[in-house]
Amino acid sequence: MELLPTLRLACVLLLADLVVLAALAQLAPALAQLGLVATWLEAGLRLPVLVGAGMLLAPGGPRGAAALVSLAPATFLTLRGCLELPGAPPVLLAMATPSWLALAYGAVLLALLTWTSLAPGVALGTKEVKYQAALRRQLALAWPEWPFLSGAFFFLVLAALGETSVPYCTGKALDVLRHGDGPTAFAIAIGFVCLASASR
Image (cartoon, rainbow, N blue to C red; front, side, top):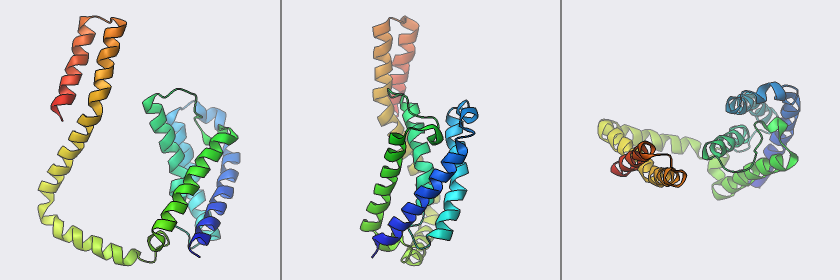
């Protein structure tokens, strides 16, 4: 059955990660002072242990599962910190409450099971050689057009940034009006709104 290697790998990674987090709990107070850097340092320390545990104890599971287990919580905490959402998330998983750990592991397990059930051959690496050959052929065909493709990619990223920054800049301009920060701050906020609108 395709799901058995995934479940076995998930259990191995969970146990290995709990051991690593218990060891990192000794360093957690010192690391927590580094803020967001500590989150990624913890993820970097967990990654080689999880890769080794997955290769030794549960071979044949989905590739990239160890990276998902170690990097997904750090990515989530970074995005949460950038968006300034209410609440106090943990800086490190080693200091997290059991509910945060259950949420992190549950999300990773759900992602692994979904990937394995939707694309079982790709998840377990059986069709990987065929897809790599097809990717090489596509890259060889696209290589002569790389200046146009890189320009298109640049302008696509610029358009996406413009689309997402217009509501943010508009909100900042409204905050300046609400707080009465003065005409200079309002002019700067309106300038950012115009710049974001022009990039659309």
